[in-house]
Length: 376
Ligand SMILES: *Cc1c(COP(=O)(O)O)cnc(C)c1O
Image (cartoon, rainbow, N blue to C red; front, side, top):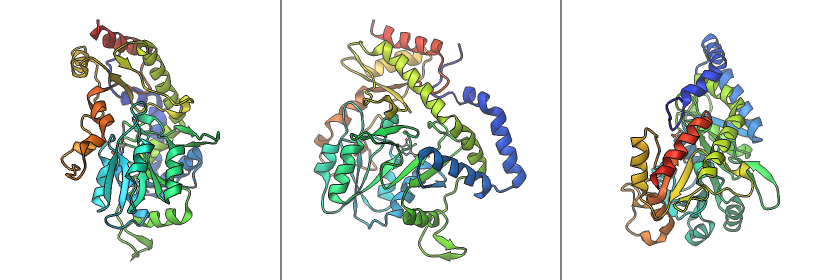
């Protein structure tokens, strides 16, 4: 059995080595290292895959979120509602732009932003909601879209963990995550479901004017060479990363299927255990692409389980150990932590097991056995 890793990029690479080398060679030959034909080709492949009009590649997922917000022309002090239980980048960009992050609690089953809590947090200054499709599970987009319409708010999806997931609306309409709001951001960090061999990110939108505005922002606010109409940034996807991503995009559905199969195998082991709660799936399991496979440990010592696994050479992760409202950088003395009963509990209960597209049956059986023997 191969060594067990949280993410096994090396095994994945072995299957695509030749195609990646060919793509990279093409970039070396044409020497368009920034933008150029390879980035364009990946961009249009991704537009077709997502059925979205515009993909705007950029340097990383955090930039993608920041640029998406810049595109909406919000003003300092405008409020942006997001989840208390996500990677810090989501709230970091709100603060960097001098907007006001308003954190709200999550649903204990899906770990995603709680629509009822969004509704309660709305004030006359609220301008946007950032739902995160956490761990690969779609946020409750029916309810979130209704709230956004009712209060005339933008929806900015943080799709860094959800690429390839399909959301099914209550009326049966289906669409890919990243196309469900006004604008979306994703990350191509190597460990993400669609990962580069370095940093990368992208913004998605169906709005032509917003796309045009954002294409200028990523390039120093230029719409005509050396004419700077707005204050922009320098955020580009480099062509070598685009070459890798173009190959991996072809396999994204396969990779996500492999993750779902692994999740199903894990859940078969754990679903009846009194101390373990397996990840919830919305009716249609297409809604979850298992960026992480995250268990809740109840009435047992989660940290002792983590120690037990690491003694057995099984890596695992705590995503995330501290709610954002309690992080030093984002703590707000005017906010009462009693508003976040769910995240405060989740940070002590969650544990994420190894999850990637190359997990073998042997590995899953072994990991499951070690998890279960902790409780014996
Ligand atoms: C990874 C991630 C980001 C940031 O992406 P980078 O490419 O690392 O900047 C933002 N939000 C979430 C939820 C993430 O998981």
